[in-house]
Figure 1 (tube, one colour):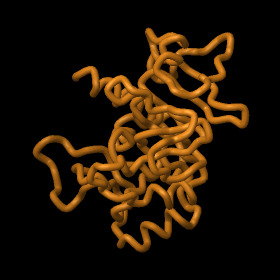
Figure 2 (cartoon, rainbow, N blue to C red):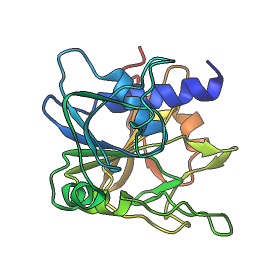
Figure 3 (cartoon, rainbow, N blue to C red):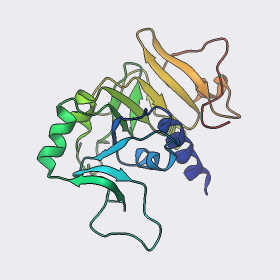
Length: 221
């Protein structure tokens, strides 16, 4: 596994710990789709894929792919017993209607207000916003799961400079740390192994509240 792949899986492993038994969960494109691989034993959640599937399972083993079953990002997926397929209108109604307990979304930027920008870099071809705006408005909890930097440039900023998808993210999980969005600002809650608060501060373009003691990131002991 490359360093980048390891970082992506570290984020997904930690994000999986935010899910509780019985949750109805939407996973965004990219890093969030890896969360299906890290659900704790004894925790049963139902994954919703906005392209029209509930009870989405982990990726299939190589050679066992069903070419009619993919996640919202077009990657191979599986469906668990009792799963269902439905049209986009119904899928978006689930997102908008307050039926999603937790949405774990990727981001190009996230800021101190809990806003994320996830769909457009000016001057580049945009795939579209998809259902991210609906999920940020309708999900009971929103967690941003993202790499901390882009080629060394901070992706966590005081205010997003890219077009905003929506607000309301309560937590940001990166390969370096876990940040919680509070009324006072971003609070450093956990640190990945081998990472110091000084490292995080140097790679973050937002003011951080740093407690005297910051515990090790859960799921990475």
